[in-house]
Amino acid sequence: MLKGRVYLTASLAALLCVVSFAPVSQAQMGRYGYVDSERIFSEFKEWDKAQEEFNTQYKAWDDEAKEMQKELEEMVVEYEKQKLILSADKKKEREAAIEAKRQSLDAFTKEIFGPGGTAERKNNALVKPLMEKLNAAIERVATEENYDFIFTSEALAYAKKDYDITDKIIEALAEE
Image 1 (cartoon, rainbow, N blue to C red):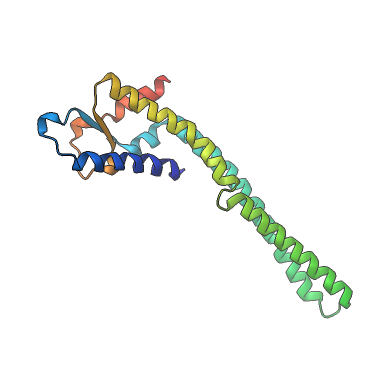
Image 2 (tube, rainbow, N blue to C red):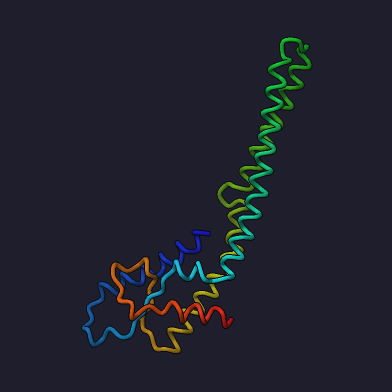
């Protein structure tokens, strides 16, 4: 679920860079605040539920892959024990079965855990609505309280605690 954090941090970090280099006087700076992302993710209950759902599904996929791996290893061990007494046809048959099992495991692993695989799509499906909700809460607080800029805590080298609006964002998330 880190991917959602990376996107949020990256976009806000880019905004920080633009603002940092803009030639403005102190009077033009406006009002700004920052969000403690770690607190948001630790206190946003829907995030915990999504993380738990993903972890449960991921464990099921991982368990299935481990079971397939175990079956493959058992087939190989059994074949190695018996190959000296097997006929040429039986050897080919067993070798083909082992290769089919290996290909099945490889296909499963790629389908689930590979780039663009089921695990990545599931994670994105869980994270996207939460990131939209978080961004909407940030925008609502910024608009209602007349903030010009809000950054994540990761995008700042220093932030005065007076500007931490994390509690307000958590309250806004709880209201939705």
